[in-house]
Amino acid sequence: MKLIDTLKNIWNIEELKDRIIMTFSLLLVYRFGAQVVLPGIDSSQLQSFSDNFTGGIGGLLNAFTGGAFSSASVFALGIMPYISASIVVQLMGIAIPYLQKLQKEGESGRRKINQITRWLTIGICLIQAPSYLLSLKSLGVPDSAFIYGMGLDFIVPSVIILVTGCVFAMWLGEKITDKGIGNGISLLIMVGIIATLPQAVLQEVYARLETGGIMLVLIEFVVWFVVILACVMLVMAVRKIPVQYARRAASGGYEKNVFGARQFIPLKLNASGVMPIIFAQAIMFVPAALGSLDTSWASWVQTEFSNIFGFWYNLVFALLIIVFTYFYTAITVPTNKMADDLKRSGGFIPGIRPGTETSEYLDRIMSQITLPGSIFLALVAIFPAFASLMGITQAWALFYGGTSLLIMVGVAIDTMQQINSYLLNRHYDGLIKSGKNRKAVA
Image 1 (spheres, rainbow, N blue to C red):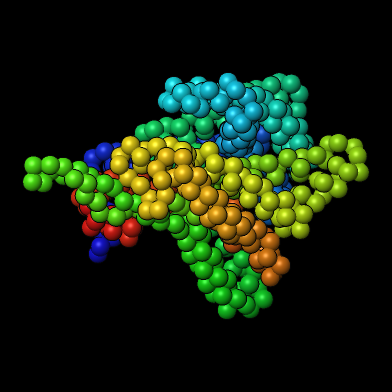
Image 2 (image 1 turned 180 degrees about the vertical axis):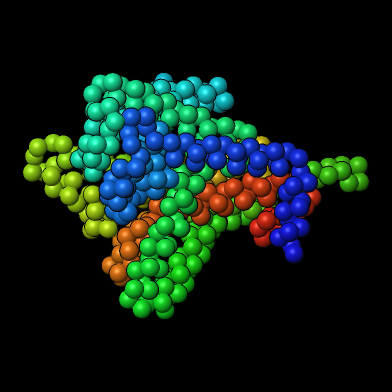
């Protein structure tokens, strides 16, 4: 009953309702485009091609595109080129003074950085699109599926369509962020992952029923639920730094300092959210593509890193997640600005001097809580490898933690928090407990 009341409250807020409708509309457009096959390809002959993407790194890549990769869709490249471009731009921002200057220019600088990222996305697409088309035959697409053959009259238009599809998907994500609810790019990835979830569940259930293991199915779902709770705890966990504010109040003809109510600075255990997972996953696709190099080393790298349940893949993946967690936290949690804002508002951390000491203290605390947070994030990310060792089908194991589940949980919570803020601003009960607490305090 309370859920129904909350849904009614959401519908009563005109701006929120319009944003939700806009979000769903744009997501439906993206899902529709993921089903449109490239011109010149017979979709009825793609079954053997699709079968190659039920598990492993191909299954993960296919999940990120919502099945568009295995169906030779106009959105086959998905949004991953944009993610790759974002990684490159942010990494270059550390070493290139021009990008560092743009980062400090506020909104105008952010727009210029976004423009650079868009152009770089097109450049990456121009490399990935021909590679994708030329690999279709080796991945299982029969010659008869190409209605007009594999000549330039097919390659050139298809490259243009694939690049346009990626740019259009990027535009949809940005429009969702501006006009809808949640982070548009993350929502596109999440919707693609959810689209492959029912098929993975059915495959696991059928496999267990054939062996008479219905209890194992129930146990697997209980474990999956526990892993989801662990992911929620990871995303929601915060370290509260106590803060006091001094306000001036007139009394008896003179002013004196009166300490205000104690408040907190919430420092998130995982301040970077799902971005380290997405960044690390984008980089992990690179070693698997080295098979074109005719060397024994490249062959070994491709073999080891094409198996997402293997030892070396998960070891490197976990290390990348830890590194990117520190990196992304450093660029998204400005402790210097937090200390300056606290000082200007008359606040201070008990026992710590305002200004530089406060900044160093916050930075030290962030470093301390980021280490266990990043390790926990890495463990959850590689948990599908352990699930696979327990006999779970690869397609279903991908949702036992790992990139897929973490993205779904992180994006869902972020979207709920945005909806929650609209409800609280209109004096309605929020969707989550912390929101109600904030309302009570206010």
